Amino acid sequence: MNFIESVSLMWWVVIVETFIVVLLTLVLKRTLGGLSREGSLRRSESTRYGQITEQFMPFISDYPYDSKQFRFLGSPIDGVQFEEDKIVMIEFKSAGSKLSTRQRKIRNLIKEGKVDFQEIRVG
Image (cartoon, rainbow, N blue to C red; front, side):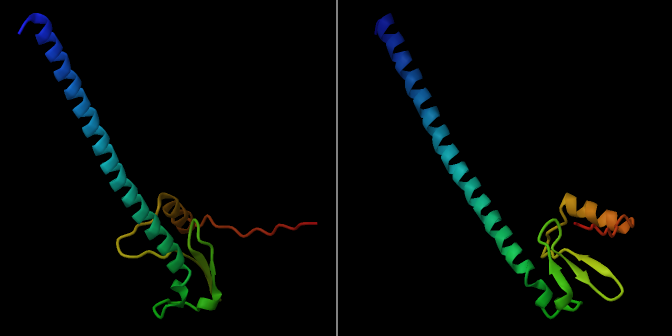
């Protein structure tokens, strides 16, 4: 094999190796992207399921208040419970779910007594 043939063969090897690397990269991206998308879809379904079930939580037997006095907000907290002697902000959670950063801030503001009532008149 002469010099030109060996250089040609070397370039063909480089081209084939590059093609294989690109092909494997595309396959992995598609596979991992699919897994990521599947996980995203599952989280989205879970979120929708949670939003739907939150609306029914005041009607379960374990709910400690009169469900007729609950008003659903949805975000940033699930709702407000109006009692004769207090008003309770309610956030329903299941299993290992935790309060979001915003929900923790709201909880802390309430604990610090930074809650007001304001009457705004129009017209």
